[in-house]
Length: 148
Image (cartoon, rainbow, N blue to C red; front, side, top):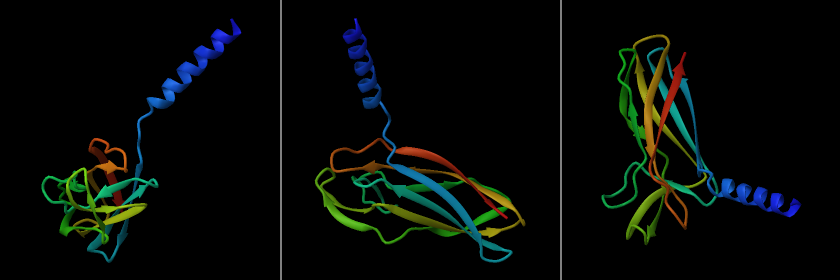
């Protein structure tokens, strides 16, 4: 009886470990005021070793690019496009093309013009994470950054 209980426990434990959802990318957010009328919003991806996410600038037919959609607000307006660090580039057989990607971490930046002393910048980002064995489905993440 003891062996059956031990086997059952191990079976359920192994199934629960295998069924855990992979989440190799963690996002964090911050903002820095430049002056009373401008600020920069920082969106940082911390990427587990062996995984990568892709640049905002990926050719058609490639992986899903990282993208940002900022919610409209009367309290701020976007200045230019979202900036990104210089990505690495390599040929990926999966997509049969050179792709631009980030490993370990990447900090994206969006400059905003402030129309209020204090505001919250909200939006949604989308990204796709891959390693050398698999690509996860694209994931959308909501974000919110307070600027004081």
